[in-house]
Length: 104
Image (cartoon, rainbow, N blue to C red; front, side, top):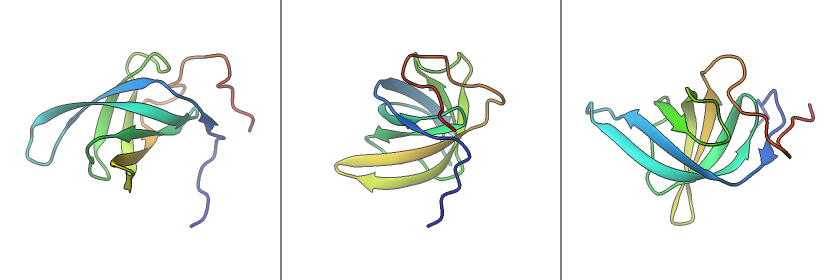
């Protein structure tokens, strides 16, 4: 699998809340934990899967208020799932936080 990221992702931790609409039209909410984050995407751990291509709204102290992303991958990880996200918020979606500056 080739590396497609344009920005360096930095390991981080912290809670994140997600809201999305499933394929049946239901509004769903879930809490997860960040594993890494960059200016253009991130990865987090959840207890339930979310379909690839789903748009999610994110609520996290590490992100700007209206952060949204598309689920690019959802893979089993331990007892839960690892989601790969790509920002759709345009421009900068992440707040400036110590230890989260991009190197590349």
